[in-house]
Amino acid sequence: MNTVAKMAGIGCLVGFALLLLNRPATAEATNKPSNPQAQERVLFFSECWDNHKPETFDNALRLFQSVRAEYLDTLEAELASVEVLRIRWLKGESQAVTADYATWLATEPSPIAQGHALRYFADDAAQRGDYAKAETLYKQAITLAGNHIAAGLAAVNLADLYLNRLSKPLEGKTLFEQTAKQFAGSPIEPEIRRRWANALDFFAANAPPATQEEARAILQPTSDMPASSPLLPHAQYALAEALYLLSKPAEALAALEKACANLEPYRDQQWAEAGLALMIALQQKFERWDDAIASARRYTELFPDKNAAHAQLTIGMSYLGRTSDARATLARLLRDYPDSFPAKHAGEHFPELLK
Image (cartoon, rainbow, N blue to C red; front, top):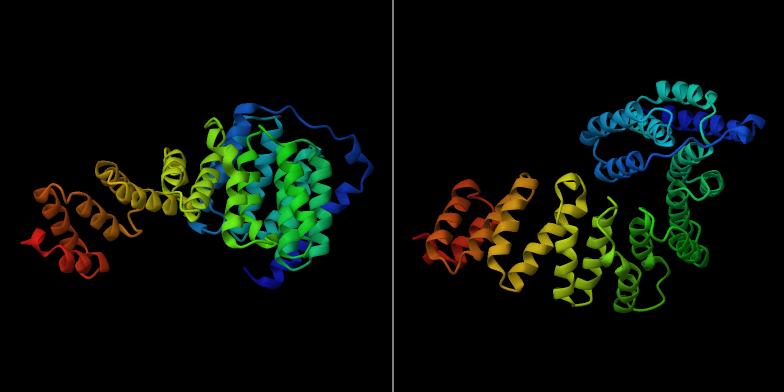
């Protein structure tokens, strides 16, 4: 997309948004009823696609369009409309999206939906370096969305802005704490805690171990949360990472096994691959060979284009107690990935298995 055209388009969209906020009619708008099943689907779809990977855009677009069609006259249908516009914008349809957004505003959508849209405008302003505008838009988004989870998501973005760009560590930390308290027990609490723990480096006054200990304390409540939020597995992975860095591998493995219990929907997320790879390594560390073999096979199924040779080596090494199985697996590694580092490693360190 042409950068100049994109910036101009963003300016138009923000202008439309602010125009709506200043119209008297906006104050008369009411929030539509929320459907719990639709809310869970919107959160789930939001977590499962990656806005940095164009190959995920079309599927995400279809999913949000399905919510919009199935749950007409609900708040989630309006939120899904915002997501559809956002994805189309990322796909390069800036001119059409500008027009469609103006049409959407004319329908006087719910204040929560307006706040949800303003969060994305604030994101764009922050990316452009207009931090003052971003701060204003985030605050307006929070006000409009009130106690809805859309407000919580806008709040954590604002907290990140305070820490990353505006050099306001106290404001950022306070906002994270307040938001976690406000949305305790909600479907987005895991995401708030993950983002809060991830931001600790920006206002850490202590050495890294102390920072990781604080991250563990922030994330610990996620270890006992029921597996009802689609945002929970990512937070559990973050907890495992903190525990691993604190040299608590057994606790890290327990957290990873929760995080990786159902990775299939998250295969496009970088954390999913990293989490499964770390789980395999820890299962080997504790000589849980059968579990490591099963996890490595699962890795090759979920991420066939990512380090498949290394996963094959993992399987072969885990079979060391069963020589015939190890020989067959490592021979397959040499056949399928002859020039890979894992194949060379196997040939150098386990030549007796390949005879």
